[in-house]
Amino acid sequence: MRKLLFCVPMMLLLAGCTPAKVSQAEELTLGLRGEYLEMTACSAHLSVSADYGQRVYAYEMDAALEGEELTLTLTAPETVAGMTARLDGETGTLEYDGVWVETGTLDDNGLTPLGAFSAMLEAARGGYITACALDEEENLLRVDCGDPTASPGKGREVTLWFEPSTRNLVRGEVSVDGFRVILCECTDFVKS
Image (cartoon, rainbow, N blue to C red; front, top):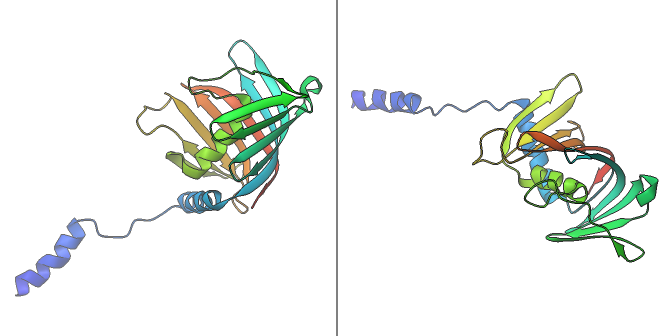
């Protein structure tokens, strides 16, 4: 009987049954994942830079997400100010007085500058997290998301920065095959 009692605690130690330590960054990341999954609405002002390789375009827009519908109103440059995009799930249109505009895609999955905010929110809600860390210099939480089946630098990767105390989205980047195609700065971010 004595040998059996000694054997059980040794097996528990060998099996690694000690609780794992969770870093502060991992704890914050798990918390914000839950908040973004529960979020039903949000709004923000976005400054988006889209790099098509031979040309780079800069846009500013006001974003409002309500349920599944995202409405984006372009505010800059002046030539497109007032254009409104409505995105809901799989479909999206960009219209201004009945005119539709095609901006072109940045990857094989149809990523456009107008879809950047949706891609960032999708990554915050359910993207495969490859790394997370607190950036003490900027006082931001950085969360990297990528394809779990692809090697680093392949496919679409999304990097997000959040303000740790409010968990508000501050900035995001979308890269395709290691090349940054979208940089998005978020101000006045409000979620509900």
